[in-house]
Length: 369
Image 1 (cartoon, helix red, strand yellow):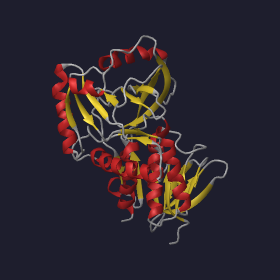
Image 2: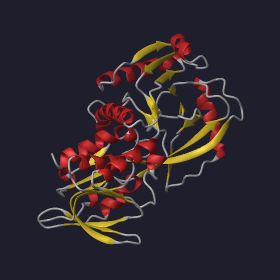
Image 3: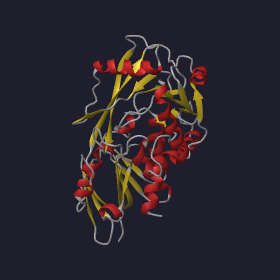
Image 4: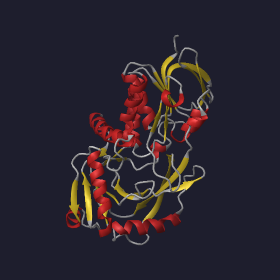
């Protein structure tokens, strides 16, 4: 049958836009639907804007493979289109001698993941790079960095339009019906509610992915993972930024932990922590600074009292709850839910921004190639 468009992607964050771009580059007419009034208003606008190297993720996982590949694609993309970024490097630090074994395990895991250029450093070598740092040992990851996520997303949206597609904001996804013979009838809400037929449908809705999947008729409820809201807050620091490189302590259960970055404007920022909440809430409780001071002073003893200022918060779409092992990305196709032509993305948290171009290519390859 003839379809009104080739592909519809639900969600105009970094991953949704990268997926729409991947469709458009292959000559498929593509619509990216966004419920908010602008692109990138969810997870993609409330993160650290860090370009991850791919150090931590389990061997053979989607996170390991797509982060390493995605980082390579991302740097090439940012360079090509002159989007602001800095390959500043990262130090993963042990602050006590007993942490040396965990640091070495990260180094070995990164090697298995194919991460390039890593160096083991003694505490003295790390302090030679960053004099204010407290570290007994460290890993230097030269290909970690920071980026302008909004500039990146805006450029991808422009590409989609230039290739004959469209990014349509203020257009919430209201549901879909699989069509006999293949494809989907997609319903949208908002002021211009309509129906559109499409050959391919991709759910890249971040925190709304589970609800979007539940709105697709015959999508099996048992294949929709439970969503856990992993809140993280950030604090800025008054005064001169203490380090030029990213600084990460060892990971905490369920996340990479509160880390340091100097953003592209030169501002020192710390975060995120991890707090599981019942519903999205983007407030920042100033009292959380107490725990930040304790964590930060382990690697930066020179942090002064009163220097931290509440900044912003983000919510991560976690597929694990408190005390549970961190999970992999889920890129669920027909093998999982039985609906040909549909892929649902669940649990695309960190390193989703870094991995976005690789995720987009992966989705389109599974559906089309």
